[in-house]
Amino acid sequence: MATYLDEILAAHRLVAEEDTRPLGELVEAAMALPPCRGFARALAGDGLSVIAEIKRRSPSRGDLAPGLVPSVVAKAYESGGAACLSVLTDEAFFGGSVGDLTEARAAVDLPVLRKDFTVGSNDICDARIMGADAVLLIVAALSDTELTTYLSLAADVGIDALVEVHDRVEAERALAAGATLVGVNARDLRTFEVDLEGAAGLIAELPGTVVRVAESGIKSPTDAALVASAGCDAVLVGEHLVTAGDPADALKELVAACS
View: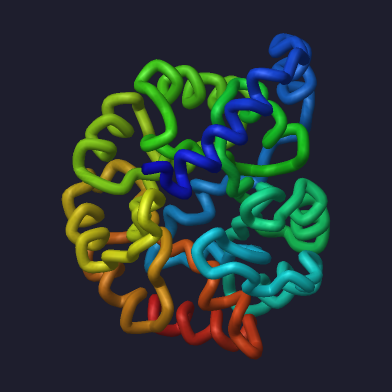
């Protein structure tokens, strides 16, 4: 039976297959840009950092904040103490856009992750060219060859790569490919169910040489404390913040719990 992830990946791979732009020209354009803001570096300090996400909707929950203004939300997150931003750019399934990312990044000084489904080398360059400081690589969506190739290309064009895993096998693949920024997603992208305790257990097994990020399922300071106790360096929080009455205050509560 087809899953959310299968449908999303099929759509993105179709777009990638129809993309005839020469990779060399994109790489040249990406490498000519000023340096990124340092996404991984912003998360590697003391304490637990927060990556605050701008997210309009999700396939599992539908509309979350369809009318949000990216610049306004980005400024609220910055004032609330976010270390970085994450912006959904997938339009068909999450209601996002490249415009959401560029508007949010222009409004603040924080590093920004392009949250999308990377399935081709051109996607890496596009993320860099649109102004992102990090790109998402989902291990469940990629072969070992793709993962290694995209990590190498990201390094070449100067953009950080957040490598997302869901279980121990995927974590081993990520580390073998050379990932240094690893996100453990508590949400199963095939069923969209969340297991935060299981994610914390996997985070605890990751080597301290990588920057460790907990993704999904963080809804309270208690949740943040759980993954922090497992050795996490940062949490990525989206739905809890965009659906809060005051995103800045909700973020401040998480940041205070992480201090």
